[in-house]
Image (spheres, rainbow, N blue to C red):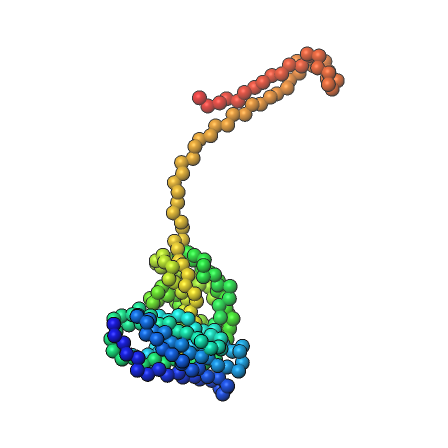
Length: 250
């Protein structure tokens, strides 16, 4: 695979002037492209949405096979790094590529709360989702397995809660994630962390219960002498014990 990186640019959209993103270096390490950059902001509490684009599609769609300081919730700082798996994204691509970083101060329209990505979600079950609302625009809530859409709800109110149903036809796997998108701003997309989907009913163990026979001894005290009760603690032989056993099975 032969790739020539011709141009690397950085675009920064923000209303404030004390903010900048500067690409420092780009490495081509085998099948990895590593972009080093600095993200400067006078307000260290700001968070950014950082995406990486290429000239292959005229910088239309953000790259997805990326890791590191990319995506949402990126804090300002120096020595930021994006690692791009070019073969996973483009296969055995050969030719020239230009890269572009785009960044902006970002307040997500959806921020999931108390979502347990380590939990296994069962097919055919419903789960309550909650999130912090950052926009009043209607949203789409979709379930993806890898890059394939499994199910979803369109034009849902962004009210901070939704009942997620895992369809019965979903296959078991660990590469599921939720995709939230703003219906009025297609570039505004939020993904959950990957999670697992499992079978609704686990495999049943066939157990043959053993028959248990319980015998009970019933002790009945009867009085042979009806002449009166003996004083407590005085047994003069006038009382006999009659032991009756229940009928036990053969």
